[in-house]
Image 1 (cartoon, rainbow over the protein chains, first blue to last red):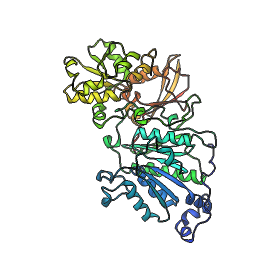
Image 2 (cartoon, rainbow over the protein chains, first blue to last red):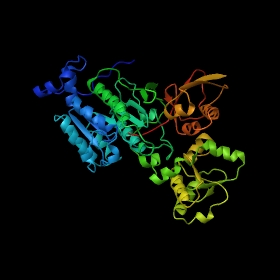
Image 3 (cartoon, rainbow over the protein chains, first blue to last red):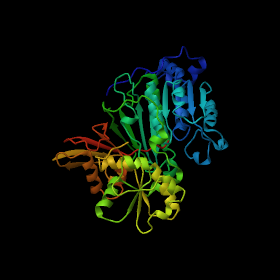
Image 4 (cartoon, chains in turn yellow, brown):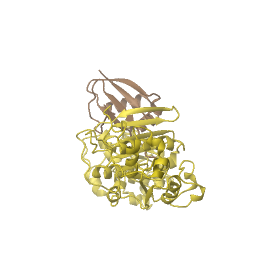
Length: 392
Length: 84
């Protein structure tokens, strides 16, 4: 155990009579006390997403007396959100989530200032938005935003509390590259690379137990309060995994590899994560093979057609032996469908799996129902099967 | 021979049917060899989970599949999910 970190936030000048009455149960805990409550009052916390994790997180941060809360969410409340997003109610359906959350917070604690950021977080606006806050809570629902939040926090030297949920399972940690104890880690020290597109279902596709949001969201707020007030052992360099069915928490140590490249600028995260359409995601769900599975198909001598859907100049750089080039757009337009074999299985691949997932959806639609694609594309093939291949 | 302790989390745990297991590998075995061995030992869903999981060797995320394993190392298998 490395002990607590210094408080992240300076205390506010004073607490009013009304605030003393409201926060009395905090004030009489010696570790929090008036000093800790003044720090919470002075704290500016940004919550990414007023959804499953953001709902309980915002409610508890507000109730705890965090003086300024920012909410980043461009989405509107849908009826299917209400099973878990407890900051919103029936009458909020159709309203902006950020606005609905602000109204709930005003009811919980009128002393909280709420800033709404109802635009989509992008590489262009992230640094500007983050710079106004001491701490960030990330409860977003996709990999591209997760890496964007991480990289922006790293560049600004800001700590953030990260939580993620799926079905009955949750993961939570604190990432802070510039941690004053010198033991800083970031999300890329846990997940250096995004998964191949289409391989990991979202909560919208796979479901999530509503109350899991509270289990993980409350740990996130717990860690936020500890960082702000400088108490306890922060969840830095440790990942907590939670299994609601087993009712068990496990801990994984995370250490930094000194060789990892420094994060110095924001990139195009949709490209980085190979973001694909819902239809492509659906098509890839049960029709993705791994590089090892493709290798096994080659080794078995089984007949199949490997189609490379990249562009000719990429094919020039590197190719998988035996692959036939049919660029994605020719498949999407239908033009190339007649060139594809009807009598043997088809395996599609591209650079990292995004374009081949899109082409796969088109093939499934055209009746090639047993077509599959290579998860992670030629990059994963080069890495796992044939490291002699150049990568680009 | 070298022995590593493999710890499975989330969908990896479900696919492997265990929290963890000790795996004996020949000297000089790499992370890639271990992944192939685990997939072979657990036919079914584990291969797919392994193809997208993050591997932490003694706490350090390792993307170099040719990295040689050492006796006594801990390998955490963490499948990513991004729901919120």
